[in-house]
Length: 417
Image (cartoon, rainbow, N blue to C red; front, side, top):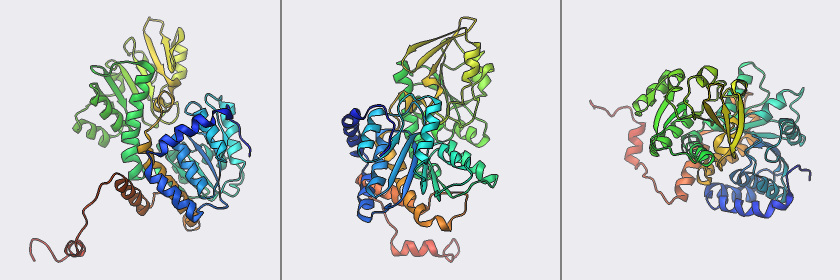
């Protein structure tokens, strides 16, 4: 088995941490047993580009239990846990990743993962999907799964240009993903990453959240819960209105730049914070990104206008401007919750990765009936994941009796009988 990791001797440490995560992922554990019994993925090759965390390991081990041959690379150079890589290699998974790899190595590792000629790719940012579309042939690949907002945007761009060669299921858009992982998971890990990197006090600070999608909602809510004053910046009128009705102040970034102590971008768009904003910021302002790619803060311009740069703490870099002001960039502008913290909690990723696992089986069974487009997660998969999670939490639901079921199907009942 081929692999390229930091140190195989870290496997025992990684295994202990994976077991801890699995204890908090009851839905995925149940699906793993189901896959093993059915041999759901026997003879299938899966290439994955994901954040390599303990929770990700639980997903890949579930696929492996079902008989899949799995090749894994990173979806971010700074979110890889080297001990997890080692543990996965010992589980029979080909891993091509190590923490802090440069971009040349990152690209080479993508090609290593695709060298298995996968039947399905599991993506976090669409790097595998795009790499396959830069080749003259898709090889054996018949379908893909995408878990992030950024990756779904890229896949839809391919589809709109009639270039997409196979069906892609947007796991990111499933209610059991974006309602929970994006809102509660990203909300928590973003704040966690900021606090670990800076040890700053949120209470009384002004936090500017750029973007009020599901991730932005989570960041804003968690920050307010810790006593911060929150300003939201948006380009979408409906989301901005929702932020107002949720009790947040909404301002253009040019105005918010003068007021913020901490800035968090979570939009999926490039250059959200740029030179005109840097010029208005307070001395000591902190800049963090929680979008998938490190493009939301214009780091190149920040470096150009800085007269001096220095590393203050791990994941905290100081940029001193010619006028004496200092701005602080976290995690090199990459996903702060993945880089400076430990990503989303296992209990949250249990939902998202259960979606991914079930969609993998669905796609490998049904790809011939799907067009080369971006598809939603089937409603029955989403409902099953939610039901399994509730059952694992010991929570029971009401059910409709026969009379209520009949009423729901009737058109005769109303104000006038």
